[in-house]
Length: 223
Image (cartoon, rainbow, N blue to C red; front, side):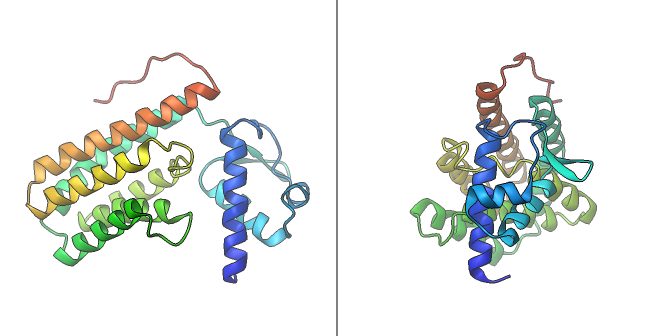
């Protein structure tokens, strides 16, 4: 796919995500390619790519011939972060002695570029966040756990700085604090910072979801 098509696909994706998270596209609504092409004034290729990405992130489900919007429940988010919190602190503890200095520098540089606004695309925040967590997970030396972490992160990556803007700068600084702990070899500190980082991200998503679909505030404990 050309760069222009990729850009259009990203634009279509962001618009569909906005509609889902703001309730314009409701659970059960059909993601009909031809209709969305008309509404977005785009050809089929970028719209098809956007729908495929939404499906891969667990926001759609097959219903007959069509994909329909899935409801994102607080319970589902809680389950995802329960698993991430079980895996990622252990991963960063193991990765502390395995990450190379140039890897740490590269991750820190990417985060600082985000904070400085020196990134080239709207998807940069998602890419940097995914790279941060994936690099740490892979450095831990457990490929199976790394794959699970990547899959879990994909299911929450829609809640980026455009949807939960208050998390952008805070999340960046939390990443930098973790990298500093890794650089100093402070394994337990890095793990504690990762736990707090995931808790903060989860809580910010809950606040956003509660605005859209009020539910009981009781959450499953993170043991």
